[in-house]
Length: 311
Ligand code: UDP
Ligand code: MG
Image (cartoon, rainbow, N blue to C red; front, side):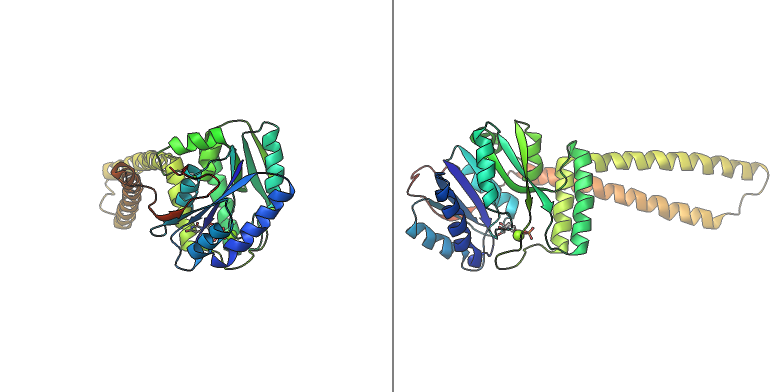
């Protein structure tokens, strides 16, 4: 059985059509399936739509978060409810083309354990977002040590992989963690389509926050940058030190107030930025150490097909 995980945040308009399209496609191809809709604390009627769907169909599981916890948490909740032999994560707005699920499934049947969806075309988005995404992926690819350009959350994973991910307690970046785990991988290219309805949940600020949090959860390189900056400053200070000494010896001291001011504020800013970077990591450690759950499920409907299997 194939489990379809669909995170949904304020997607009342998309839930039913997404189900209809994917379900009929899977039926045509004789693929047994279950659907796990994770309502990420929507304020609209998303959860109502999910419960209606679950009344009409037997293969629907619906989880409703107590508030908005973000897509990463929604995926995480979806993964822990998987009953299938493999699972696909797909967006509710069908920007990920559903026909690719079949292609991914066939590859899984051939023995691949992870089938990554790779964006061929990024679809319509703001210029700033596509430039930002390019920078973000090149930074994170370099840090993580594998090429994640154009990667997405659209992917199929074998049950084994799902179990491994479920055992990881950290608040990771799903896209990167699924690379990190290894396994026998392949990719499927797809074009990002237009949203079927509703609008994107991302703001520029939200994306920036997401990027910083993912880079920090994936790498300690920013801390090494602090060390590197320190070394650069040391070299500069040696040069200036020698210069100042020479000035003193030849009796030209006392001048150079401007240099003193510039150096002081420059060092001050570097120290503050460095403290900020270190402070950010400490905050992340604090977050993890508190051990709060990644999400809170306030209500749920279970699929009748796989009753009592919700953990
Ligand atoms: N989503 C979510 N929680 C959030 C934001 C988004 O579960 O806090 C879901 C959303 O419902 C959709 C998917 O994540 O199914 C992708 O979101 P969106 O289409 O807004 O992002 P974009 O496609 O613009 O990157
Ligand atoms: Mg979308």
